Amino acid sequence: MRRSRHLARLRMELPLAETIYDVAIIGGGPAGYMAAIRGAEYGLKVALIEKTDRLGGTCLHVGCIPTKALLFNAEIWDHLKHAAEFGISFGEGGIGMPTLDWAAVQKRKNAIIAKHVKGLDFLMKKHKIARIEGFGRLTGPALDGVHSVEVTTAGGGGAAGEVSQVKAKNVILATGSEAKMLPGLEADSSILTNIEILALDQVPKSLVVIGAGAVGVEFSSLFRSFGTEVTIVEFLPCVVPVEDEEVSKELTRLFKKRGIEVNTGAKVEKVEKTETGVKVTFTDANGKTQVKEAEKVLVAVGRAGRTSNIGVEKTKIELERGLIKVNEAQETAEPGVFAIGDIVAGLPQLAHVGAMSGMVAVARIAGAKFRPVRRDRIPGCTYTEPQIGSVGLTEAQAKEKGYTVKVGKFPFAGNSKATILGSHDGFVKIVSDAKYGEILGVHILGPQATELIAEAVVAMELEGTVEELMFTIHAHPTLAESLLDAYGAVEGMAINA
Image 1 (cartoon, one colour):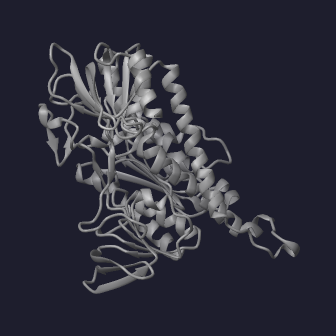
Image 2: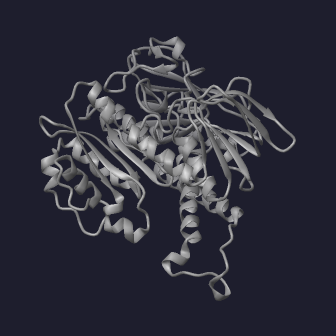
Image 3: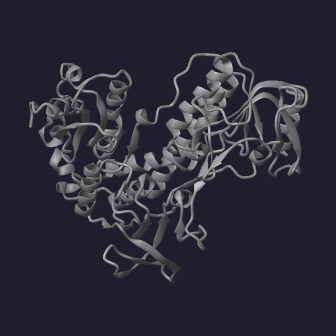
């Protein structure tokens, strides 16, 4: 009944067939809702169409936010396990140990999600954005400059399958992505994707992770912190393959030091259920068959953009390997139709990329100034222990592009704040052009790398040189000083190494 009342109220307040919006956005994840808010700030009349009754998409509900909440719990847990080093003891005589309340961990995670769902609801009302619940799809090209989006409700209150039309001068597709699954497998209580693993009612004793991209290594890291026996199986020759080779090698070493079994260059042959969990058969890098049994298996082999059944086949929109091709303003080949976020060809599937691409699209629609999303200015963040933050070209990529490369590298072992934190693993690596001192890439493995990388993004965006940044004062004692030393290292003049 609640959904029926909602639809009835929507029709009273906003007669869908009569209202013509400046822009209708299909998808309420970070790309969609941030585009909606920015569009409203430009003075556009905005409709946001979302198939569920909660905004936030994968990122807020089963992705970035809950995963990072658990990773923060894992970080605290790791500190508590070494509390004696910081002069903190538990129990009588200081010999007790803290205990993990997994139910409380999950409760906190869910509370964080709920808080931000409410925040999004507030923002929609604040900016007078028409929020329309249902599955949206294009009906074809615009007629007389107006697009029509068909919206189908999805269950509840007897309104299942009810169809309405939303009219708009422009449409932004922001339908997001979903986890890929290995052929022949389906997600259940033993074979997990990012959705199921976030809802576990207890910490598994053992876990096989198939795939060592950001999702795979983050879950490997957090569950290892909580005591799970973790095995990684990765088809490519290194973990986090998009990162600089030195970062990948060092993360592998540190994972093995933590007791995580890492198998790279390995091909999964079979995943079978057993009475106690799952059995994964794979061929290792030496061509030998290996079998690993575990309580759970996480399939983290990438994500597929949701471009099917949204009407693209009825338009001039062009696809590339299932993703939508756009220009620098996020415009598709169909006039008045834009695409943003995980469904866009050529861009990494990251929430912050989706958000910025959405802001570019609505700026174009509003006739405002914008700067296109640049692939070499996108920060990548992986919240493992230790963390990874990177932007720009790796050393290998810079050489492939013909640059004469100068590299500066500074270990966190020489940073005083890292000593205070008791976190010395990792380094900062600067990749620069030897001729002009241009910074081509920055790669950080270590404490708070996901925060530190922001400085590098700004420096590169403003075309700062190594020389300029060597003379940029950094506060002491801070982790950020590691960047100052790394800039100096490019010229062989790091102070603390």
